Length: 327
Image (spheres, one colour):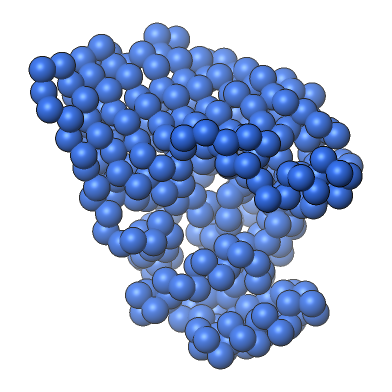
């Protein structure tokens, strides 16, 4: 994979730390704003990125790379992914894929028409521990309750309360608890159970944005709850309850540090099947394979998953009367 990175923020810093272990990925370019130039220059030195750009059209005209990793703020995902696809580039897009499902459908149409890979970077779907959980879930009987709690008091919440609206709490920029952290919980559950029958989002809304909330996904005989909070904190873990036992997942649903299996009359087992200590390693290892081999059946499968997630997001935001893209 010959890669161009769009963005120079925290997630890009995090991703670049694993590139030394992904020799198959060539870092051809990075795109940012004029204000990002000092940061990008340092990244160029530290990680061997070949070229720095501040103009997206000039960047996309280059034949040096075949894939774009869109790691920009949420509200820019759709616009920049669309530009990259129109220039014939494969696209790996950070979560949330887009601000609404209709935008994702448009991107999908362009990508599939051009036979291009379009895929969402959502770590939990590719982690060895997630694969292990999916295997173990068949052994705990009839599934009854799934609860995912990712609650972390935001360092920006105090400023928000004082009236300073930073991107993490800005409706216009796709902020809020659902889109920032609860989205991982949604992916976690959809990957296990698929599309729910009903969606209900009970949110704490301040200045038009959800600072925390409880998303209820009704699967008939199984009920799932996704809790995401940026205005309060709690032990971050998930619990999957069946008639014959339970699975307790330690850590946030984008990392899945480890998990425990609890069955009646059996000792609790602590399991950690990590392939790599960094959560992004396995997904990018696979993305390289998918792009190199043009595994479009896999791409279509993952797009179906992402569309289900975006459908849930649309319903949840509507239920809480939250309109993203407006301040």
